[in-house]
Length: 219
Ligand code: AMP
Image (cartoon, rainbow, N blue to C red; front, side):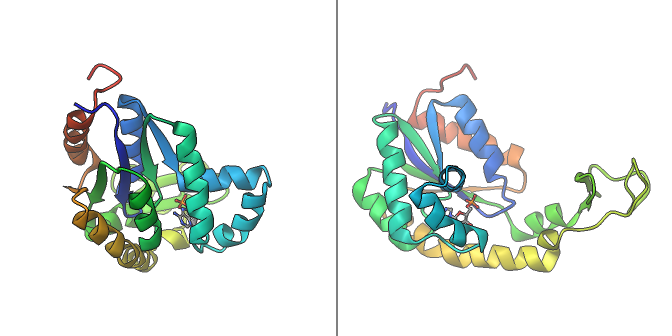
């Protein structure tokens, strides 16, 4: 069995991708290469790349493909012969094409969670703005509906969490990722993991990865 895994994790915002990625890193000797984290690190050190990227990142636009590809190549070079899991990259068909042409990518872990489930998850979220306390009407409700437990002040819903905003975000995600998923499917490396709960999806991801490489910790 190959002990090296070169993969990509994909999933819509709210699909539980962050949680699944964290569990993978915990259980396997895999370098998590997140394009967003890389960009934020470059921005923090005010490097050339960071300065260029800032305007795009802060306005919610994609960083130009050539720069992104170069940045990821550098990061992957530093991983050397080890395993890696890309997160947030590729975001465009071109990025995917370059990646697949340069590397032997073993698999894409694509989390497929129904939109209605994601909408429901986010819909229940209310916050107390001054403190940042977060409530969820479904599993962490405030004692008095609509009011903060500590101060009794009103709770609000983030504009980002409103159903119409979330739906729009999911539609954009879906149209951007479609060509990437098609390419990966044609390359025979697409693995879809369906489910409504992260804890339900995780065992399947774990089993898949155990076929690819040896876990670094006892399971
Ligand atoms: P993320 O943390 O993955 O949501 O990324 C934060 C921001 O970084 C995005 O909104 C984009 O502006 C930029 N970004 C991250 N990954 C990429 C990528 N693969 N291609 C272009 N821009 C990216």
